[in-house]
Image 1 (cartoon, rainbow, N blue to C red):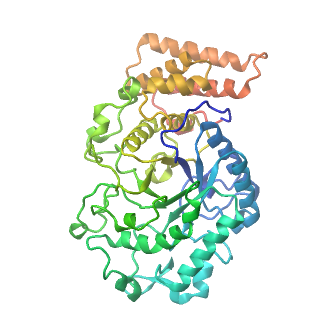
Image 2: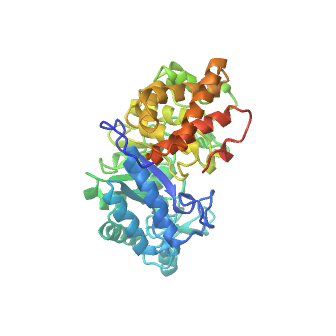
Image 3: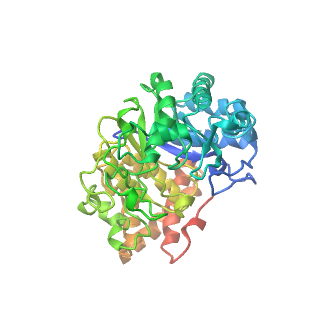
Length: 478
């Protein structure tokens, strides 16, 4: 999918793909391809790193998606500085912002893996007194104390090097999910800090603020995002929680203090995963809406007010925000599923709540048809979040297929098939359109290979899905 889609100004211009290097598989025959995990070694060929992200860059450019987060951007295992420069330079040439994933107090530091000055493990070996301290007084492996003076100096220096050395378009900061350091300095820091601010947000502030102030001059034209790791419901009682009870849709406070201290141009990345309707919800009323609900209504009432995200709930005012959806990934057990309903919901709710962007994973090749649909839906709804699925069919699928009419017909048949309401006439129409798309593959006069093949893949997948129960992820991964 490299054809440039026609697009107006985006309603969610700060939108991007979020990826891990080791499981972004666009080169399908590398024996080191992986489909799971976060801390994995990189087992593919170094050249595959460059080619995987060249193809993803072309996809992002064709879809009008602004950026690509790469966790593992810098690793010895895939060429270190030299190959990372190739990836960043190519993306810049295509107008796509590469956003290296940078762990501040955890997740590898600036140089994710390798014997490098700006790798976190390398830093900790040289500064063993800079480890984060657990509640029992032990050192936390792979984690740095955010209040340690040498760490703060090292992080500032490393970020300046990163933006000086590479043609990158932003950064995605994380500090280690909900971590807390119990060293005397970090405990003393709490004195005078706003009461009621959860410790994990306080440690985020200690970790992120030096980095964000270092990068303040980059924020006017680059995507500088920091992970909050939570949604933004202003409720929750951390004192009353049992172990393992944490709800990712809640801030557990009214307003995290970091929002008043971060540079105004930085962007908080809120986790929308638990705020949108859930695939495996115990209550069917909280499951993702069927596609039919969006077919002619871009904003059905049922999606605008749920216990997971009550109507009127918006992120803290006075700062900028983007949202992150994990759905369609191995961590949500649906890496190969079509999640168009969730993408539509997330974009609509984010737009109405005043967010500037949404991110989804960008790790699966669009040759896998469910993900071709996911990518096309994401591209559409970050530009037109209020649109119906019928609009998506006409405006976006119509550009990929032969016409707006065919795109509309496809999304209507898909919605009815998903809901089990396909009529006999629609069943016949599906067969006819699939045959016509197949005939085009054999047409020696049609040289538009990409359009012909994408059209055939879409119709062939839908036709096979209509044959009966079958595992979606094994269909049409050509």
